[in-house]
Length: 98
Image 1 (cartoon, rainbow, N blue to C red):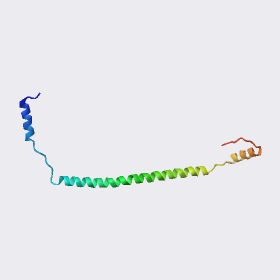
Image 2: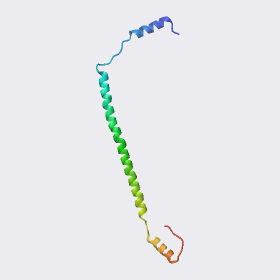
Image 3: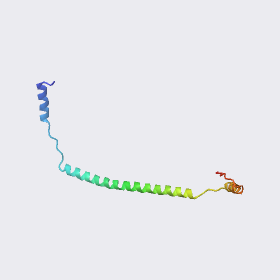
């Protein structure tokens, strides 16, 4: 534990400390800087989701277009056509997929 002498020394040191102040108009400049930064970041935040959603919708539209385009085109080869015509001629129910 601290004895009285040590306690008195510590209290004396505390009483001799000077109060720290700020420059004139410090808070005015700080508030102006914070308002300026918050205005810029708010504008940038509004633009980011707009661009993100636009890119996402374009990608989804492109993927949908690719799916529809791939389903509409059917690849037929001469071999497949010949086998299909033979199957029709012989009335076969087997389907050959190549």
